[in-house]
Length: 289
Image 1: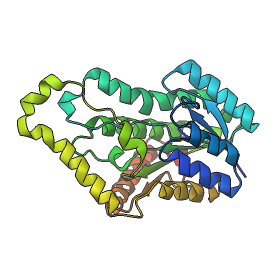
Image 2: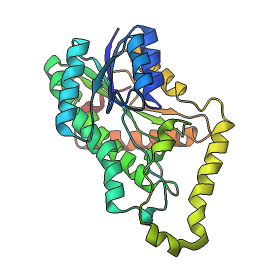
Image 3: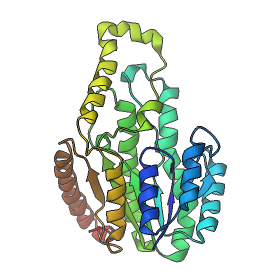
Image 4: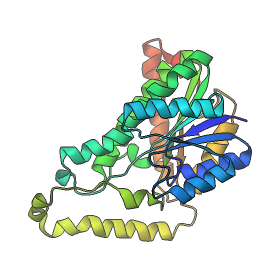
């Protein structure tokens, strides 16, 4: 059984994953920005189930480093990091101010980097570790009104591509999980544009994002398999695979988009291997199937 740390444990994807891993017998710790806040009841239930909870704000370096140290101490070590904490964004791209975009990137990109910098000294010292990351299908393609969110996940994908290669000699394997849209509280806390003055210039088009979001909600209601529990199942399945034989990318989607993303991923995999082979670096891909 593994010692696993999940960032954003009380959120939409972290919560069912934590429950599934605890049920499997793993030792689980997780982070929450405010354990006594609005998710206090959820946190208490996780603790009752055996999870260790640490306070961590991934937008603050000192908080992240202290939270990681607390998690490693609570788990008496660390085998698996699930870099899962994230925030959404939705709205007409021009109306997103630089400050709006910074809020998203500070969690989804810099937050991931803070967590990695806090965890990697431990993994490198022990010569082994597994890191999972929550990306998105729209970290592979861009769709209207999700430009800022997609950009943050595209950036995450690039960062993880580099971590995959740069950490391979240290025995640290990397896995990206790419979910489709899921009906979670994620949609209730999304960053939306604050430039209301420019919104008027869009006229009737300004109403389209709300209509599109309503259509997505209706679609998700009609897809009972498109649920956060599918992510938990994917994580459990990945961790059951032998070290070094896990796929680099795992698509989790039941809306019909997944196969197209998998086709794109397969093509990129071939391109990546060809480029690294020409530079003599293909061995840096060895820790993934």
